[in-house]
Length: 252
Image 1 (cartoon, rainbow, N blue to C red):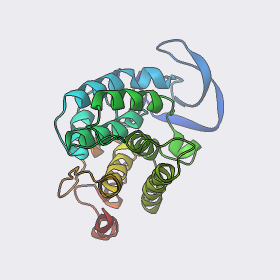
Image 2 (tube, rainbow, N blue to C red; image 1 turned 45 degrees about the vertical axis):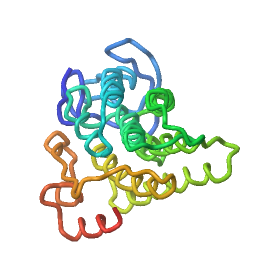
Image 3 (cartoon, rainbow, N blue to C red; image 1 turned 90 degrees about the vertical axis):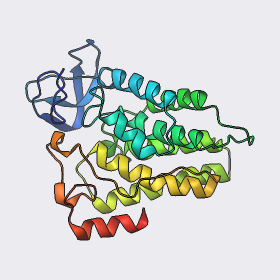
Image 4 (cartoon, one colour; image 1 turned 90 degrees about the horizontal axis):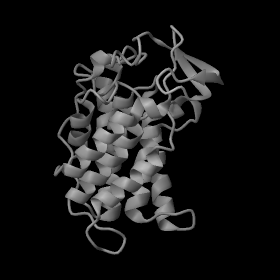
């Protein structure tokens, strides 16, 4: 497989996206389904084949991590070859990094007891695997925001019938999506992941009384692998436009 520049995992060719779903067949497992993208050479890779190794790696990494900084956890994971430049494995990574940092910082469950990190991660995995790739463009909600909301709902015990926990989850995801929209597209799982975590950590710390930590500065080292990187117009680019950076970071 080719990790490439956010291109086809099979041949490295650029991806082509359709507005309307079409019948496709995964070249790895043979699964037939409807999808929104193939590469220029006609290859289609289903979400499960795309993210299976990455999700397994994420679960192992988070289970053993002692870090209270979800950005550090994210960066360690994204440096592994199983985490591609873009893809639905990030829909697991963001929530898993938040749960891990929360638990490692001594976070409590809804009963006031130490959070069972492995059980929470297992539940996050189940939920996150239901979120397909491309939701940012086709559903109007980025998977990084959804993953953060899933993590929050696990931490605060939200269900469709709760009152305040339900509201807290909606507030968190809406805050994240608003900040993503302010910067704009196209999709970049690194940029949106950073935005989600930088927004989620202070919110969760305030609402749940946790003590997760964040670095003084977040600088992306993955931009060379993303052909659509916005470079100076991304606040995490090493030489970001000062106005772009200043507009985003004061709210972090």
